[in-house]
Amino acid sequence: MTAAIDVRSVVKRYGNFEALKGVSLSIERGEFFGLLGPNGAGKTTLISIIAGLGRPDAGEVRVMGHAVGDDFRAARRALGVVPQELVFDPFFTVRETLRLTSGYYGIRRNDDWIDEILANLDLSDKADANMRALSGGMKRRVLVAQALVHRPPVIVLDEPTAGVDVELRQTLWKFVRRLNDDGHTIVLTTHYLEEAQELCGRVAMLKHGQVVALDDTHALLRRFPGHRLHLLLSQAPLPPELEALRIEDEDRPVPRVTLRVDDYEAIEWILASVRNAGCRIEEMELERADLEDVFVRIMKDNR
Image 1 (cartoon, rainbow, N blue to C red):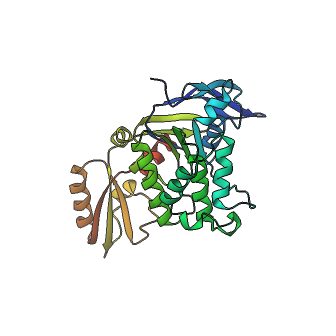
Image 2 (cartoon, one colour):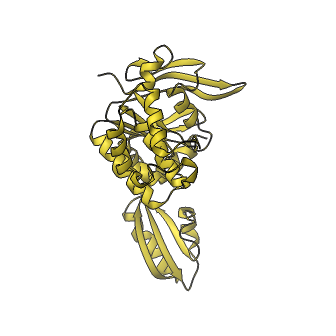
Image 3 (cartoon, rainbow, N blue to C red):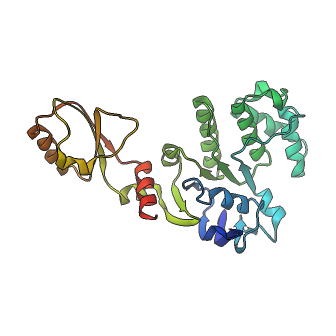
């Protein structure tokens, strides 16, 4: 079966700077796929090339089998992109904006689908509101609606929940999950790695324009087994022999201590060291390693 998105050896340069260095990956139809990386890794550049907004200096991209360069119309019609930036026309209402977007794809009498999108994104009561009158979160919902208005089989979400409230996140993910269940391919870029861990079946990690990891999410989590042990200590400082296991954790500031635990057997040794040093354990919590831990370790290993 033809892949939903097929990226083959894509290179993109800006002067002497090489933003993408031969990126290759294939996203199958119906996948919920995560594209992760630090700022400047090349994610937005890659998305721009997939959407036909930029041209690679080498390599090829296909969307649903259509070459983005040679068969642009078919490739673009198969794709819906939610950009990271808030871009809107201030002269139209929400419904007029969606009707206009439908017209770009030659779709007439699309109000039934527009109404369904508005309802699923909790925008029905804003349908006749001018875009200028909407909050930032509401404008982002409209961007999602615009990406879906032509019913594309492939949907790319570029930081869709950046700076938005919890209600929008829950509403958006409920709708996007439904679209994925219906067979739509979803590609997500996000800095909220807990979202990627929960939603994405596979993940690609980029750094300096290269793919440094590409695997099933659960396989990536198994690749770096381990836990975090959170301790609240009193009466004595952390024993020196445990300092090598310390992890900086901004969510649990001093006097709480976070230690890396590679296996359960190590917990006995840690607790014995704490007792022998005269420390008193006031609180203790064991937390399994998550995708954020894996991400940090992969980025460190690929400096």
